[in-house]
Amino acid sequence: MKSMHKKMLAVCIGVAIGSGFSVTAMADSAPSLSVINWWTAGSEAKAMHVLVQMMKAKGVNIQNDAIAGGGGAQARTILKTRLMEGQIPGAAQIKGVEIQQWGHTGLLANIDAAAKAGNWDKNVPTVVNDYMKYKGNYVAAPMDLHRLNWLWYNRAILKKSGISAAPQSWPELMADLAKIKKAGYIPMAGGGNGWMIATEFDPIALETGGPTWYKDVFVKLDPKAIDSPTMVKALERLRAIEAYTPKSLAGRTWNFDTALVAHGKAAFQIMGDWANGQFEFLHVTPGGQQVGCVAFPGTAKEFIYNVDSFIFFRQNTPAKRAAEIKLAETMVSPKFQLLFNKYKGSIPDLMNVSLNGYNACQKKSRAQFLVARKENGLVPSFSQNMSTYGPPTGAFIDSLDKFYTSNETPQAAAAAMAKRVEVAKSQD
Ligand code: GAL
Image 1 (cartoon, protein in one colour):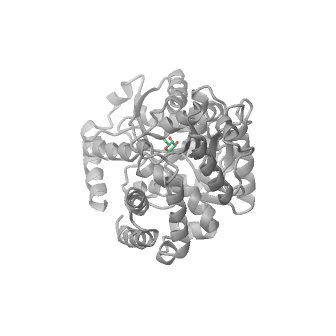
Image 2 (tube, helix red, strand yellow):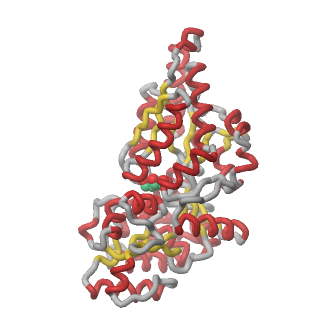
Image 3 (cartoon, helix red, strand yellow):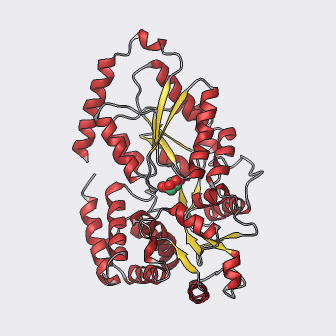
């Protein structure tokens, strides 16, 4: 990784010098910026369209480079390939601790001017802002605030299975899954790929071990916490969920699963609230008559957060440089965040933006964020790259994928996970 970064830096600097920061470059009147992201689901594309339109009105063409693959593994690979080929995007979707890794490459642009204009220091919560700076300067802009620990459910299926209210505890969830299976519905949609399995495990781990253990594992990468009886218990719970998830859903995407719940084919989905946006896109309002949202059982007081952010690259013309500052300013503006987050299913990073027109689950999310922030209940999502850097995150996801798709015992999986994470720690 280190040598890859050096190589990218050399290629990109070469391209910048080759093109020359000349006065003629100032002549390009409608600058165009590529924005790399992985938002290909209907709701995601609709939300992203808001950005394209707003930037168009400001005289900047946004090339929406959406690369399929929930969780963004493919988008991140393509970003690196493009940089190696000397194609510098305007911005790219990179989140959490990984922003620091990108800072080391020397390729990122300082966007303090945008942060100053929008007073991000004051208007954006510190827990979000801290990720956006490299060595004290802003190099990334946040667009949303997602909550991971949700359980989405189809009300009619619960009713027809003899369940009167959404589950509030692990034993209740287990009892409900058994009833739904008996009634002939798919109890749990999920398990499509490694990233989805990790996303489902995220709240299960928090529920099993609580916030301190969660952070010991996924932030501190403590081998004793990873290879522990608590991890074994959490993995047993993942197995219990897996037993209610049809194997035929392997290879399916998260939004396919959301449609199963929306259309009365599956009872539950464990997913972050980008599913909320997708339900709305399918004309089903979560919190309304058909679909409900409840905190994943046992995590009502906590908020596993995921912030979508974009890093900015050093540009080779003054016009592009000016355009990227406009783009960063727009991403964190109240007008944009209000519309974008409505479609995305998340809430604005700007706590002073009103949630008028948002659904009940989004309103619950904001209320829960504020409570969790006060009561030490905020936890960075490991599955969405918020808790640690790339290689250890990959080690967790690979371990969970292997466990889920084989007969590995929870004990063996916990031990193997600790080993993989140790190896990953030495990689940059
Ligand atoms: C996450 C991203 C979300 C959502 C999801 C599925 O990593 O943070 O905004 O898009 O992937 O695509």
